[in-house]
Length: 80
Length: 420
Image (cartoon, rainbow over all chains, first blue to last red; front, side):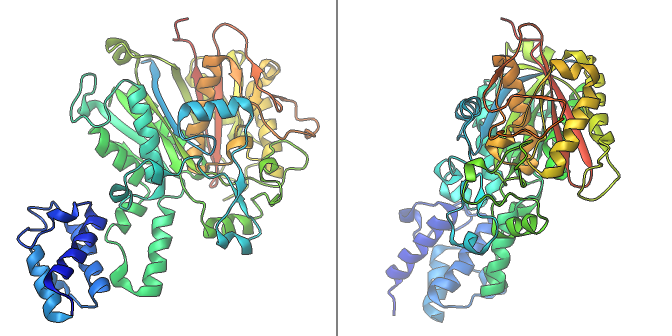
């Protein structure tokens, strides 16, 4: 089982790949939209990227609740 | 009538990643055609194409590029060069000499975001709908190149994408000319782009018997008017021009390449792919363009032909040029730069308008290469194999573009406003 930091770090690489955000800015307390300037279409790519990378399923109604990096990491920890 | 001038040019083509290298390659008679190195070409009857000399991935930043179809990436590269060449800042929100409310973009692609469409279908078929990129639609839509350039230069008077297959970018130029003459804008970013070197269009054009199969000699495959021509070579790339009213150009002290003097449009109404062999639509477009320019046929010293290197098309066009110019055909140097660049489809008209403008500026017509045994009795004077000088004095040129669907668009440019 991956640690929280391992998940955050892999998620950071994904966010960097999709939206060009520097990996060290992708910290647990950061909001995707407000802090990291990730737009709604890029967010869709990040969600699908998470499914692929971490082997989880994130239904559309759940993805709306993943507002911060920490929300996403917690969801992945709980469901992988 | 309001005079419209050309004040900026950019290009990324099979001959070079910018205008200077493209033009130097054309004058030198260089071929941009090569063997396709990807494995998928092995099973196809056509294994050659004219890929861009500089891949857009070397120019456009990766994160930005993954949201843009290859055709849009090429258009942005050429548009940045043209915009900068016209004296503007590509990244500025606002700047002197640019009134966003009076700026349009008219930029065409013949086929659109083909790579984005097909690659995402591959993903959906193989991995399911969840993996389809949410950017697919804004990447594949035909107006994506125009819209992205419009976003960058903050064009607010209209962003246009006329589609007429291989006549598309000449039609885009004609449309912008009209908009400026009507006073709906004072400046325009015009041109075309295409990126369709992919197994499907190569198979599909191949099935039409439209493409050259000279796979073992790619550099000799595009040979307009040569008796051994066997079809066109697919090319990719983009060419963009900045045009504006003479008044606007003078007010901001712009460098002027020449005038965009006129345009003529006709439709064959003959067949969905074959040109009308009588040439009526083709020479009709030329005559309309010359009349629209306020010129006489005798003023036309150069024609950049559509000249794709297809067996029938080249002969039909030679006849059309003779009818279009009448007796004046004797004083006119004809060329097909597709012999070097391949056929950029929706980007062809813009690239060849650029070549026409520079031929008049430098008084040098780029050659039609690979013209070893010219088709007999064409009745046109072709700049065979080596560049041909043009005379001193005022010069005008016609650029022809013809598209599937029977679209014919001729554009006239002159060097009349160049101060020497």
